[in-house]
Image 1 (tube, rainbow, N blue to C red):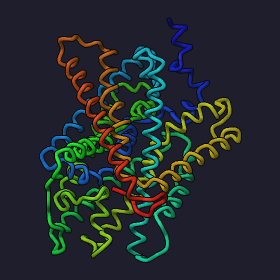
Image 2 (image 1 turned 120 degrees about the vertical axis):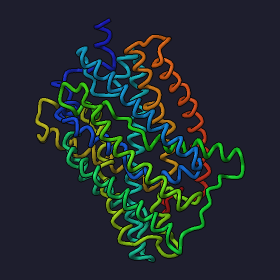
Image 3 (image 1 turned 180 degrees about the horizontal axis):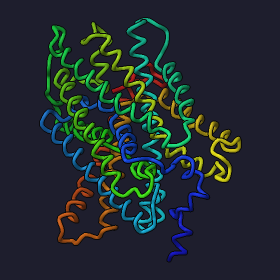
Image 4 (image 1 turned 90 degrees about the vertical axis):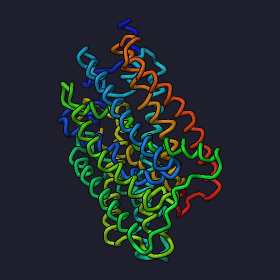
Length: 452
């Protein structure tokens, strides 16, 4: 049996032979570094989509879903950290989600399932980060030069060039200082946007507030599941094992401290952004609340300097987010392309790294320019990607690892979450793809407008 496991696709070769582990997933970090990585992975400009998610749910259901997602994801990530700690104590420290899932569940197909879902998530977020960063530049440009010739895809190309340069940071651990700044940026632009919303709501140009839902019952149901998928994507983090891999061994107990740091930031940012944005714009909330504050027609609804500073903060943090979610792709590429016997910065490894990472970023930038569906991308990624990885697999891994009694509360809570969120994921995927198809009729390739 041991020999079969060693020949399986999820068997982890030693770091001395694994360039992806040795170079990209270096284990040198402290618990607070994991907190920085987690915060960057979860608390991003997607929180500016929360008022848009609330418009499909209303006040009561919106608060309920936001709180439920927060509680369940914290619980989920806590369980996953326990499973990783258990494996480490047993002499099997896993540094990749796919290998953890395949090992615990004893299935080679689970290895390929997780790597497929992870790749879809990471690529989708990389595309979304580049798209939203390009939109931020476009918003600033359109206010400085309302009739200027530059289009959205021009700004996406600019962001792509910057991302190519930043992608050459060699390891996940090397991003720790960038991700600390990212944490501060998330707090900064959240409170700037909250201030802008309060200013907009109190101004004489404040929009008429309407919190009514769609008139058709079927449309309300589809919108609700799309909104739930968006919230799932906002809370989602499909790279927790890779983040824990950056911790210096032993990693036991360190991830929980990082989670507490991350969710403290989440509490202050998520609720304030959701409440202030939906309070002002109601069912007219845009998928990017900054666009609601700076409408195409009429004056800005808040001081331009304040909005401009918020956009700069968002833009800078998007670069960090793109870097974080690219790490799994880079680890996969370098596991095959790099020679661990050569130095990280040797010519043999440096040239392939530059070429492969640059091609990956260019591909993400191309799709961001071609398919500007930010809100819809978030919903689809949440339903198809984050819900299986964050709401289903951790519970299953915990039950398989610790084998709680069938009469225990943990057993039934975990399987209830699996069933409920599997159903939510199926409905969310259907409604999100339905909306994506509907929106596809409203734009042309390389459009200069992001479709809600």
